[in-house]
Amino acid sequence: MATNRSRPATAGPPWWLLLLAAAGIAAGLYLWQMEPVPRLPSRSATPPSTAPSDGPVDGPVDRADLGAEPAAPPPPAPAEAEAGPKFPLPESASQYAGSLPAAEASDAPILDALLALASRERLAQFLNLQDYARRFVVTIDNLPRQLVPGQWSALRPVPGQLAVAGDHERITLQPENYARYDAFVKFAESLDPKAAAKVYLRFYPLLQEQFRALGYPHGHLNDRVVAAIDDMLTAPEVSGPIRLVQPRVQYRFDDPLLESLSAGRKVMIRVGPENAARLKKVLRALRAEIVR
Image 1 (tube, rainbow, N blue to C red):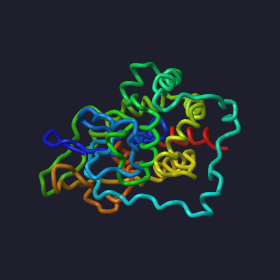
Image 2 (image 1 turned 90 degrees about the vertical axis):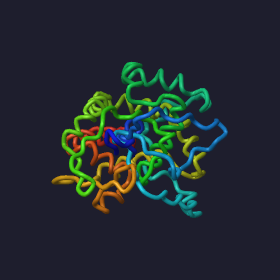
Image 3 (image 1 turned 30 degrees about the vertical axis):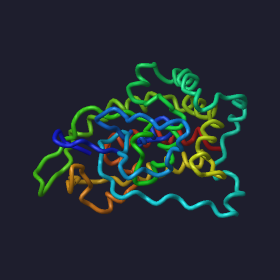
């Protein structure tokens, strides 16, 4: 998060469009920067499954210093490697079986499919559409962690400046800051969950391939999507003023319990209680469409 004197850092809302959506839902589901997203690495580069130490978090919040890089997940145990998905796709997913483009040629067909949800201008307002398959998967994978790699965010920066009050001794987040996220929340609410799920299921094999390329050779992306949604749904409701500290350029939550939360849960706090309740309703509807 940041003021007009500091550059903000962020954490992506919500599910696969938001979670981006939130994250964040999010993430990010939306964790946004105040500057253009850095150029992506070459196609041969492997996206990180955890955030780099110098990478901001993008999505429906301000940029924030989220602390040290979390440890990479351990490789699955042999028993887990043979297990099926915890949350199988709905039966309707079988109707989308067929050939899909390679990841490097997927932007155009994904955009065409997303146009069933919103106009091109509306999508471009909130989403980073370049290399979207990889962006979506990396954002989803990291929402339950403390950091989302900014250069791989699926969502664009939130406009405006962070509203805070006080001095360096006592800084509080101001309620008027929550209005900055109204446009994104309205966008999330405008998405038909059934139509959004159709796009997700249509491209699921491609997204699953990208997920396994992150370092989960036996993993199931849908399990991770549900985990990200469930994590955001359990974000605490904070009453009273939210105190911040500014040890360096970027802000942190003063409460260590809030600061230790995942990127997705921090999204739900930073958008404000009313927006969080609305996003949770969107996430629940989406979750119901992507599991049996």
